[in-house]
Length: 207
Image 1: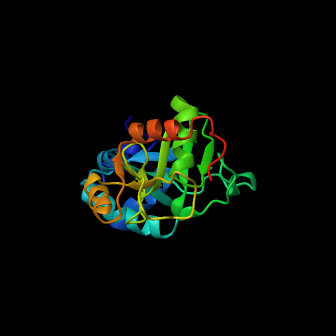
Image 2: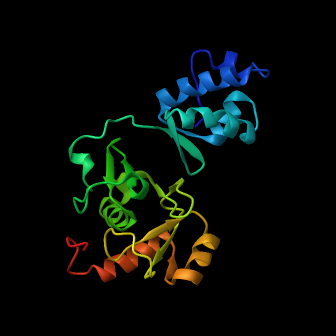
Image 3: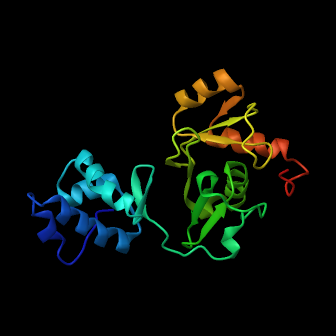
């Protein structure tokens, strides 16, 4: 959906906007919309996707936004409550670099401690989840959970829930990883199915 505002035509007409001017406009838009696609920003500001990515870097650094698959979302819109300090599925303490975050259609945020619990909870919520992000195991970047590739049955122990699941943005990285550490590369839906089979009758015990 095209981003609009009372003065959007004025902003859209400023082809020669300075980077700081575009960044200020992005601040306004993300605080209003909460989730925005890169393509929408590019069209709104009449610049290339590459220019938008450059403009976003300072906003990511300051913690205003986080990158998602194909876009950005407002960071820390909802302060994490005491309940959210624990995994929504197994109640372990949440470690940010391993967490799996879901946003539901009611704009509620749920956080799981790792991809294992995140995938199981995602399956429970099903179509209520409008966005889910997790962390690339190698690059430590935020990635789309539904577009990620998952490695199971690897020899590496990350010290979290079992059977453990590692997320990768690119399939080639996952395939390269298992050459050294073993395991199976699975898509989002395949990973959920394998987890459900392995956890059958033991859904509430992740150890």
